[in-house]
Length: 110
Image (cartoon, rainbow, N blue to C red; front, top):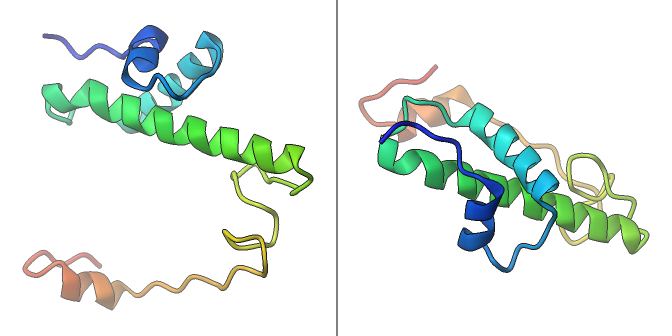
């Protein structure tokens, strides 16, 4: 079986509760396919694209709903300057390369 990108019809079959136009679904499948390459196992290739496209599409739907409700949605899918609850500012995220070195065990990521 070759690596084939899933179609909007396959998406609709896999996620019947996520409703959108075939053009929008195809757009998000194309975006997701840029992140999932043929280094993935062939059995995981199409499901990975479908799940990532579903994630992207539901984030778009949530952002559109927030904007329609007057929430001032941003292109990133969140509400500008607010956390997930919309009640206050988002705290800065801090990362540490030493965290990855400790948690990865014998694999050292730095």
